[in-house]
Image (cartoon, rainbow, N blue to C red; front, side, top):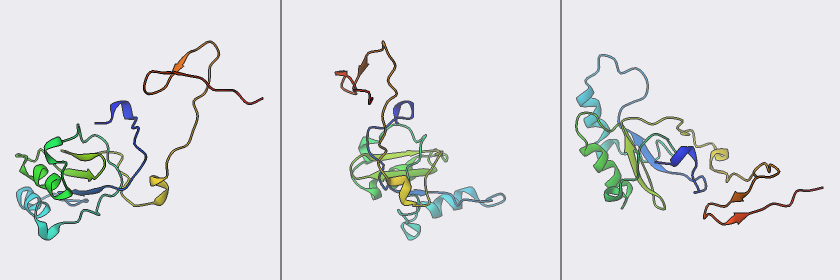
Length: 139
């Protein structure tokens, strides 16, 4: 997954879906809920358009399409996969559950972050490629 909560990719919309319905499922048949969530009749890749965290590493073998990603998630036995997400540019991610999901489609969640690092005197900085980085402080 994304190391230390940082991602060099700009925010973007994802295709994704939870395999179990949100809300109370107590007393419901878990196997039937999962079967329904893995059915193409219930296919809704727009259910989870905002990125979820905690889904683990990229699943190279399932990164060809949203359909491949869902099928790979659904092939995991014993409820080992409860949510999947796919992006054409980034690939497939899935796991038992995700957290901090941005699912409401609010456009602000997809705006690129523009910011600067706070410069501390006497400290040297490098960019993401390990090259020296400096910033001129405004007067």
